[in-house]
Amino acid sequence: MRYRWIFANLDGAAGSWQMLTLFSPDLEWKLTYVGSATSDQYDQELDSLLVGPIPVGVNKFVFEADPPDTKRIPDAEIIGVTVILLTCAYDGREFVRVGYYVNNEYDSEELVNDPPAKPIIEKIRRNVLAEKPRVTRFAIKWFALVPLARS
Image 1 (cartoon, rainbow, N blue to C red):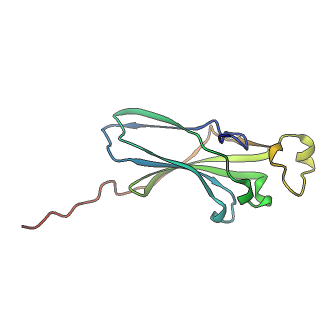
Image 2 (image 1 turned 45 degrees about the vertical axis):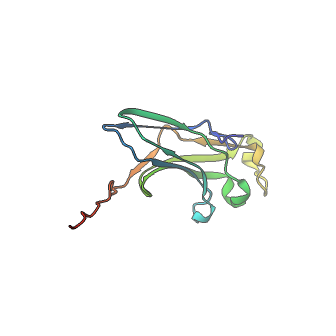
Image 3 (image 1 turned 30 degrees about the vertical axis):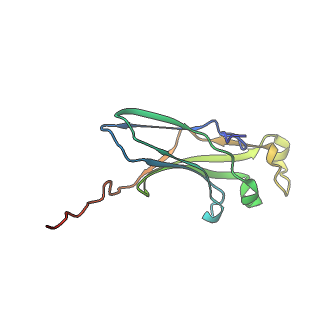
């Protein structure tokens, strides 16, 4: 099953950007599920892809990935707020990060009011605040300087 915007599925994280000139090198996009607010050891890279060369104009893609492995998320962190990160890097240097707040909650009022000690994964839905992503940009060195050969 593909990862969608409910707990077990993601319809796709759409990314778009405008290029003013042809960009031949690949850009690496990653989709990461943050499994815990207290430790990055529970983060899961859901998928990654290389995009390039990138033509001039507005470019768009839809990123689909499998769901996070809930066995790798602490039970206490499954219900509640977390983040999905869509990042992009050039030559191993991250230059943009888009974060989407996510609320994982039970799909019935009864379970919301009286949650079980062990989460029931198939009863959890994911609500993503997709309309308000948090975008962070990082200044990077885009092209390495190549030393001139001495004659």
